[in-house]
Image (cartoon, rainbow, N blue to C red; front, side, top):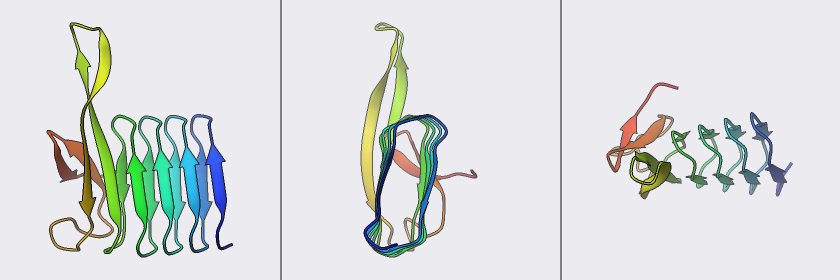
Length: 124
């Protein structure tokens, strides 16, 4: 229904919502999140997340490494890119970028990941 507030902290979560104004969050790795309502706010801090919004005017944020997102025109997508730091022996963030899904430069209903600081189309 409308105004759903859904959260998950475990790995491999599969979360969906069909109402408008959904607020969905996940902190586990490999989350698959989808929303078909308008004005959704969806976020994931886990790695390898796949977030899809088919409603209009949504905001999607993927903070984990190797995550992907797609949305309708009029929405916003934020993605992060991570690299392995040999000196520190850990994976660290390299870039975080937000793009507006204008339907031309950033296409609607097209999966994107962040590579070398740029949104690139990918098959998921």
